[in-house]
Amino acid sequence: MSIKPLRKAVFPVGGLGTRFLPATKALPKEMLPVVDRPLIQYAVDEALEAGIEQMIFVTGRGKSAIEDHFDIAYELETTMANRGKSMELLHQTRLKPGAVAYVRQQEPMGLGHAVWCARDIVGDEPFAIFLADELMVGQPGCMKQMVEAYNKVGGNLVCGYEVPANETDRYGIISPGRQDGDLVEVTALVEKPKLGTAPSNLMIPGRYILQPEVMRVLETQEKGAGGEIQLTDAMAQMIGGQPFHAYKFGGRRFDCGDKAGYIQANIALALDRPEIGPAVRQFIDTL
Ligand code: G1P
Image (cartoon, rainbow, N blue to C red; front, side):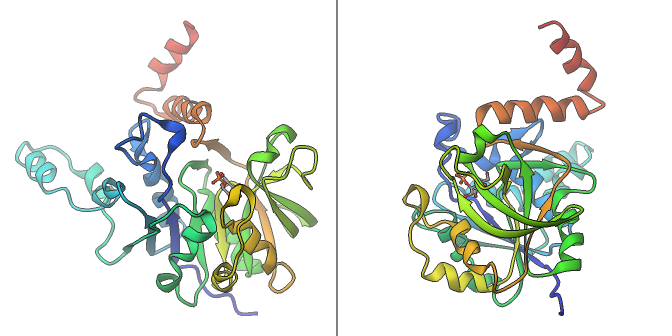
């Protein structure tokens, strides 16, 4: 079996972010900062660390701040240069010309539809998907670990993360087969199963490596849970036809699509920072 290298990543960023209103009325939810970097930056950095070269954003109206974030910022750079300030942080956020593409989803019809909108830019090669509101913290990063696993087994590989049984109705859930270390065979997938019906408590935390054939499945995918075209349903149809595994990620995960998870991410990552960690710790101890 020849395993095609992973070069491209799709970032669905067209969502409205209604759970964070009013903060997200004029600001894309992917631009909400955790400490001092927007969520989308963590996902892009994770992709770059994994060797991914082409970033494809599936975006929508009101999301242009994301495009600006990865571009040159002339005013800032000129002003900071004149003041003799370091521009390292600004340069880190620039993507190489041509290493980023934007396509509009137009209508919020579900994650599966968003991914399908990137079909022509993805072409005939495997691709990763990052849901930026899931902040994955690991050494090395989550996608780099997944790529190492993918290079052994090929096919389709999703991330897997254990959650308490009373949370399984919020996520895509894996029905696990044979397990070999961190790798688990996927025998079925279900999107947001009713509580008490989930095949396991192994959820998919928004990291995927998929073969391009999933785009053909998405083309005819019917609406699923929540009346949306679900990526999970399209992936489920690939099981059996191609290898399908889950990689159990052992690092930390923060669901930043949820207010409590977002605040937890800020606290945890602030505590990790040598320059502000002690002050934050001191404050927490006074509560
Ligand atoms: C999406 C996916 C789901 C996945 C989740 C991770 O759900 O459909 O399979 O587990 O992201 O956050 P959403 O959060 O869009 O409802």
